[in-house]
Length: 173
Image (cartoon, rainbow, N blue to C red; front, side, top):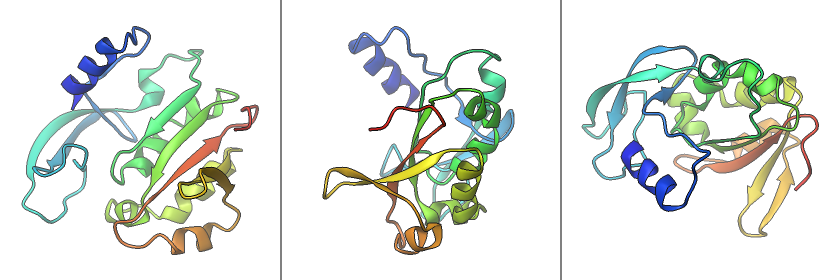
């Protein structure tokens, strides 16, 4: 996946972007990735069914990766249920960058399989001052997330929603 990302960045002239061959989590160290043979985007850091092969990978926390004072405007996360752990490892980045926008896949089933309460993820983001919206693909619009329990409860099984979390100072859509 990292090699594919590097090729795409080069092909699209994205010299300002850096591809790092590492998993993102709560702390630096080693992690085990359970690889999907059917879908290159469905590797996970928690054991799940399907006879997945394992691979040890380096794990980083974004708070350690980015030096203090480095400006971060946008984070895109789709990491198959590991979003809760990743958020723990980027609290400084999230709270020290006014206007930061986080685009994140919100998959309650995957979060729970990874041992994370989906409601706690949303509560934590709101507690850091983020406003939360979900992307309504049918209407091609953003909708505010007002009731976390209702929002989470309607996302069943393998379904997910993409959410936009805006730090204080972020421009509206």
